[in-house]
Amino acid sequence: MKSFSFAPVASTDATVLILGTMPGTKSLELQQYYGHPQNNFWRFLFEILNEDFSGDYETRKNLLIKNRIALWDVLQFCERAGSLDSAIKNEISNDFEQFLKQHPHIKTIFFNGQKAAAFFKKYVSLDNKYKLITLPSTSPANAGKTLESKLSEWKIIQNFLKV
Image (tube, rainbow, N blue to C red; front, side, top):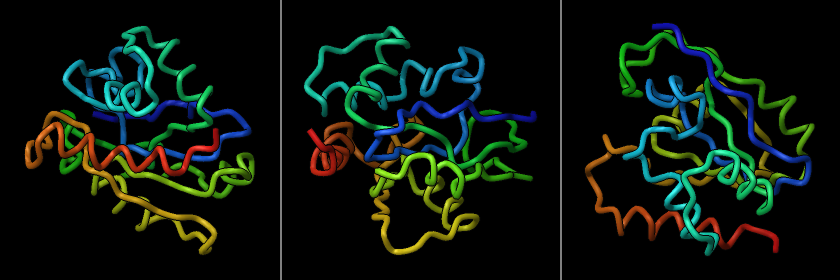
């Protein structure tokens, strides 16, 4: 199945960028980042930002904007059967050179999982002004760590937010 990523959720004053690999089947169906109800991305972000959890997608996007967090995917296009990153082939990356020029305050880039980081490093070369941090995937397919352990690692984001 051919898959295309979504437009980024970002304001021009974003200081942090979180990158996934490519929306999964459920997310594509709903047209929402991290739309699968078992994916913990939104639960983690609401917890990290000390906000009451909401299932409303506009509220979720506004949470990111308010906290100067940009959200996007490494890949613009790929072919994939199902939702597993390991099934991705014939991928094309998003244009990060242009995106980062339009968002000059971003200095830290977080990857939601090893595959997002690997694809980014395969296609994008940046100068040393960016700090790159790989976090454990929030996907339900990542069963190698406990929920508490993953959340604990994700809390590092707090150290890079400008309040």
